[in-house]
Image 1: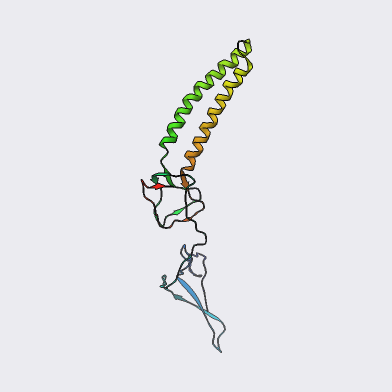
Image 2: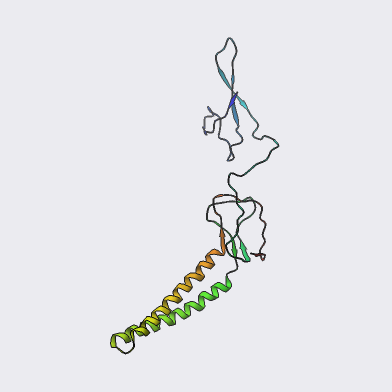
Amino acid sequence: CSAASSGANPDHSRPSASDSTGMHARWVWWVTKTRQQRDQATRQQWDSEITATGTFAPVRGVEVTGELGGTIEEIFFTAGQYVRQGAPLVRLDTSTERAQVARLQAQLRQASAAAARALRLIERGAIAQAEVEQTVAERDALAAQISEVRAVIGKKTIRAPFSGQLGIRLVERGQFLS
């Protein structure tokens, strides 16, 4: 019968810690019984490596894909790397969306100025309420479009759904994902 402990103790009165996989230990306590002796434990050296044939299966596993298609612009991982939940794995090309945001921001600045002007003019009674409502609605619609395009940009960064070790990388920079 053997038992391994996972506590690290500097005076080695107990077995030393196992490695990060929990599969190896440096010391094993052997319990022997004889008719004349009580239970007696002796400390013996044990190899830190075991050779075995078998299959490993992950506790959780997924094939990571993006919601949107596009060309891979940057890859942030290597096969076998450990990542935390939410860590970026792949970023797709967002140049078109970034240009849309720049264009919409310019339009928003213009619409904001027009809405501010309309609000000043309505106080003087120089324009109709419907005109003010129209310019304010245009400004708000542009702000919403910017938020929408930024959400698309965010979805083009594929992130780790949970913490763990990554498998084989099946994509390359410049490849199109659909």
